[in-house]
Length: 134
Ligand code: 5GP
Ligand code: ZN
Image (cartoon, rainbow, N blue to C red; front, side, top):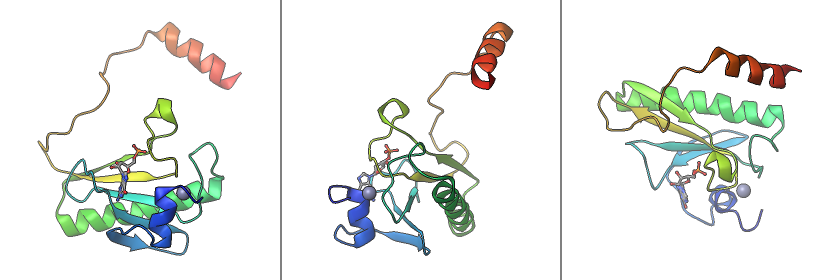
């Protein structure tokens, strides 16, 4: 896609800090990192998000994210890993080329979950489950 910055990164017309590459996917450092070593994994072919990707493409991105997560964990001495994958405006996506964030984590690294944890009412769980599975 001609106006997509991640397609331009794959093509090489925008520079990037390559972490890993295979036949179908490309991984590079996020230039606005949440933490040291924050890496993005993308499919080389343009696809917008989880809903437009076919299962094979999504699976390739996920399995490459696993390779990258293990690489960062081994090489950076991190203590954990968070993987995020945003979709569409409502899902906090800002670059509309499918990508997984692989973020090395350390105890007390200052990052925090973006949601508050509170128990759901059983009636709410049953109601949404009925809608999902009907
Ligand atoms: P999203 O918000 O869509 O889940 O993630 C997009 C990510 O792309 C952000 O974390 C942002 O920092 C990163 N990003 C945006 N523009 C560039 C760029 O030109 N190069 C790199 N390496 N990362 C970028
Ligand atoms: Zn693209």
